[in-house]
Image (cartoon, rainbow over all chains, first blue to last red; front, side, top):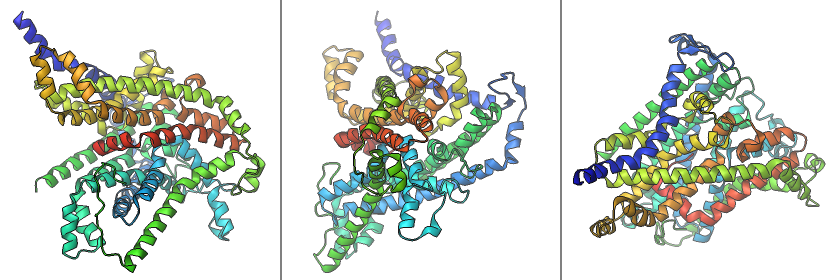
Amino acid sequence: MINMNKLIRSATPYLFLLPAIAVMSIFVYLPILENFYYSLFRWSAIDPEMHFLGLGNYIRMFSDKYIWLSLKNNVLYAVISVFFQVAVALILAYLLESKLIRPAWGTFFRNALFMPAVLAVTVVGLTWYLIYRPDTGLINQFLRLINLDSLTRTWLGEADTAIYSVIAVSQWQWVGYCMVLFIVAIQGIPDELFESARMDGATVWQQFILVAVPMVRETILVLTSITVIGAFKVFDIVYVMTGGGPNHASDVLGNYLYRVGFRNDEMGYSAAIATLLFVITFALTFIQLRIGRSGSED
Amino acid sequence: MSLTGKSSASRFDRRNTIALKIERFFAYLLFSVLSIFTIYPLIWIFTNSVKTDLELFSNSWAFPEVFRWENYVRAWEYGIAGYIWNSVFVTTISVLLNISISLMAAYALARFQFKGRNFLLYFILGGLMLAPEVSLIPLFRILSSLDIYNTYLAMILPNVAFGIPFTTFLIRSYMLSLPKEYEEAAVIDGANTFTVFLQIVIPLSRPIIASAMLLDAMRVWNEFMFALTFVLDEDIKTVPLGLMTFSGALREEWTVVMAGLIISAVPMIILFLITQRQFIRGLASGGIKG
């Protein structure tokens, strides 16, 4: 009887974990392993017979110019997003916390800037699709209003502007969100630190560099890596706004692999691109963990 | 302004000089411009959603002369009502499943010593870094072979699986910060693990459960890719996907599309405004975005 009890007790944590492990094994980890397996074949949904290619799909990626174009757009996405969602968001958070602004207005500004983060990607995407429209869209109408007709464009339809127009929308949606995370972090800094910096005659700007930035370093690191990884995972906003067009100009990896798989029905090649995406996000996470660890040692 | 309830009135305060007044002016100016830039797109959509298409094309800036609410009726009847119901259903079930599963997992990871604990912790949290695109094609096949492709479950199950890592992480951190005395006292009184879990740990974790449910509801409500890939039937489409079909079908009636956008945006905005506190607590302890 006692042994029975002991057995039950030692099994307890595993029982509690069982549902999580089961669901994640079937719907998260098994698919990732299968994805790698599928990437070694040529196959399609219509003709499920699999033709073994070895690393053929991976070799094909090197000479596929759209892969490189997509990667370039992902990198562009990452760089611009880090600038706005880390650097700019941090400065805005600091300003809102600096008491230059009265609390009631501070709350209003904070909520206003945060709001787009709660909207569905299709709501955001379609809203901006309408704003970018060449004829009735807000932007071109505004440009015409101030006599800058020469600047009007088919924002989402021209190869030079499509990806930037989409990236801009992502900044619109997420800067306020990141700002709120920085506000929380800044509120966690002990007042004494700012006080003693002030005693030493530090200006508001110097307090920012010398006190705020070092004290929220952890949040900066986490947000930078989430933003960079997010820029490689990006799919839906591009899908909704441009579908990767015109002629692949705004393709990103997530969007390209979706099209290759579910539009062109080249499942094996799509799986290979997915593996590339997996390797990139895995490497970025690994780098983040390494930097995080070396940072916490001092 | 304080989000964490901590007063910081003296923060960065300095002498009241003219320079300070100028700085103050520019700070207000900056945030006013940014707020307008953030909110105006939605106001523009709203004002045009109560116009005729002709008015939209002739001048999209103008304030509507007559509010044409019939656009909203048309949007509602054209399918939005159904999409909202589907979203409510999928979100409710996904969030409840995810929270139940994650609560159990978090409890085991926070309160028990056992073999393989670290491995299982990384196994669950590892899901945080994975791009869901990577599992798209295999999931498509798994769901087909389980015969649930193109059903509510085809959205619910992947949503739950990809939600577990973050929710478990959030709840576990909170549980680690809870004092153990209540649980120990209950054990001395003869309560078994399940009673302790249900009657002590869960009630104590209520604040983080509320935050986790909100964040998860927002994620599931807005989920697009799984719905796009695993669902075909109009009858079970959720709002994010339904809006695509909706706007595609109404290419010529932009003002009705705009009404649809507003109807879809309003529930989330209201939910956010009334639950800010739980929302931000969740963000503060998790620090992650969709």
